[in-house]
Amino acid sequence: MLFFFMFIPIDHHSKWGRSLSRYICKHACSYFPVTLHVEDINAFQSDRSYIFGYEPHSVLPIGVVALADLTASKKNFTSLLAAGYSCIIVPGGVQETFHMEHSSEIAFLKPRRGFVRIAMEMGLPLVPVFCFGQSDVFKWWKLGGQLYLKFSRALKFTPIYFWGLFGYV
Image (cartoon, rainbow, N blue to C red):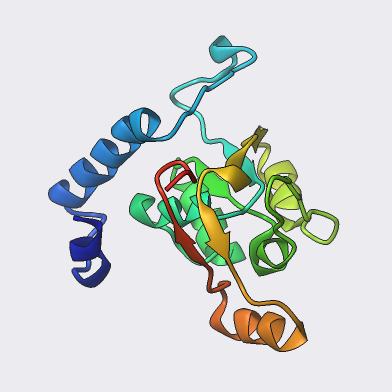
């Protein structure tokens, strides 16, 4: 099924596309060994926009594609927030995937402050999200070196070969 969706574009704005995204989100927890810890669920209001800063990048945010990912430009980000949508941003980007290590969680945040500035300017809550153990969900391999980093920046993503069910196969 995943192979099928690699080649068939999905309109995330269609009823079918939204249903598929909801289905994937609903069943991801049964596929991945996920436990969600929310400090205060009552702090969230359904009529308010939130900015979720997700770390570390690793392989899992590839699933964000199923949630209608967009380029993390200021224009896209602010227009979605102004329209009342909540946004998930993975601030580490290409640089963070370049620093990935097995059995280690690495967050690359120092130069990534634009989303914090936007949250402050728009008066929106910034919700930190951290996924522990993410680097062990899949086995993965990637190249290294400066040429690979430049290539990844040109593509705007880091080509990573990954495989396995929960990283065990």
